Length: 311
Ligand code: NDP
Image 1: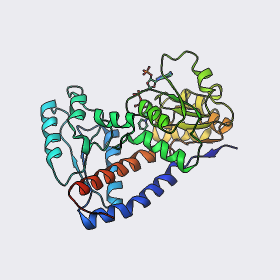
Image 2: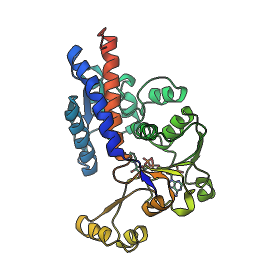
Image 3: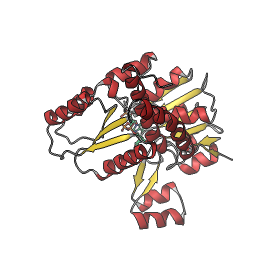
């Protein structure tokens, strides 16, 4: 019987551990501060930002949200980032992706000071991860590592397959696993015989953005499966393919217009894995928790540079 890796539980643990650190910073320095830049009116981005702001409030972290219009030019956005770079009360700057097409997203992300890079996407942060220096880490893969460690999933020497090679999930995930002494294989859309490679994995991590693409054929019996994917399925035939005969899912589709699914068939994970992350409630909650960890760590570093003794 497969067991769940409960992201909500681990999120709550991480938040509880952060409270004491936030209190110490507030008492001896000032509230840790994060500035979020939300461009335009993408509803999904607005929900993500609302959740981030709410989590800050729960923890006593100061947050402010800047909402420039979708028509903003790259130069204007760069000016806003520079303003935030200069602010002494802001420890972290987060520019919510995606940005409108006329904006040079790479230039904007690169303009964030590396010591305020809460998302861990800046080339300096990527370099620090690569050579094992301290610094902010990409939140989603860092959350996966945290989850695996807290469930004591063995990583040293483990055969791990990561499906996906994006800069925000797949690549940093692989790098973090190398640092944990796992044997890592990274797959992508050009991989030959994906199922054969995936079946080698003691630990299979899916980050492709393809609804329930991986199934029984990809999971070695007893493997641990981490499903990073978050896909909204809107077609009844897709719902039927993923959950055959499941009336509750069909009703959910009718009520809400979509059903959330990861990159791995939930039925296959339940049937073949030893442990797996549910969608929702697996990896998702950890991304924001790790954003808070990065914010608090950057605030501690700033306090330290200001000569404040926290402990
Ligand atoms: P990207 O689209 O940037 O990358 C997808 C990767 O998957 C690419 O490397 C691509 O290969 C690979 N891929 C696509 N199709 C296949 C296939 N058929 N076989 C093998 N590999 C394939 O996605 P992200 O990394 O940004 O996100 C991945 C998923 O994770 C999405 O569902 C996203 O919503 C979710 N996500 C969830 C988060 C959370 O908090 N839970 C946070 C971030 C993302 P190639 O490079 O060759 O094109």
